[in-house]
Length: 221
Image 1 (tube, rainbow, N blue to C red):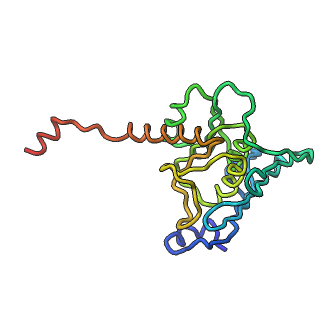
Image 2: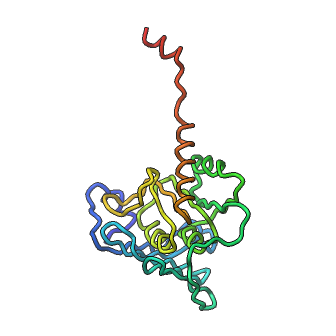
Image 3: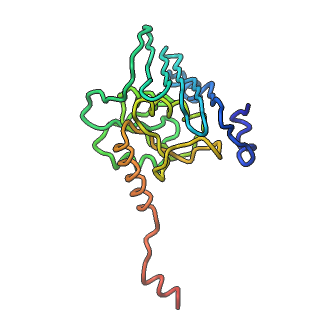
């Protein structure tokens, strides 16, 4: 068993077992400290690097989200009702883009700006994954690093409803070789993810320095 405090020291030497549980007992610490309801308990089963099942519990909201496999996802709400999750969108006129309340960096803000017109919602913890699985949001780009236990349960939930969680290079987010995620896009559909990844690439290209042929020529003299 490892903890978040020990993770940096273990990053270079720790190997994720082929079968393990990833647990985050308090995801959304800043929201919890601030007295907001956006904190969760996350538990994921990882098999050979793939998050195959997961549970997200939001104690303050009394909601439990469960993913047990492909097309096997549901929520138990505050009234004890079991509601199947299928990722189908609720009625909204513009895409709903999610961003972290506590970790919205400049690069992510620039990316979200490319999606206008859209509805931007900021909230904490793995509830962002849950909203996508429930069809209440469309895409969640996360470009700053996270730990693997921050995303595994949410990824299992989204993929169980037909969505995707992809790395910036377009490959699936997997759990092997590192304790740290170097960014990802979670989306309700693959086409939404592709649009987000294209926006990421466009934003990164815009950040590259523009070469000046005159300056380059003079520097070679």
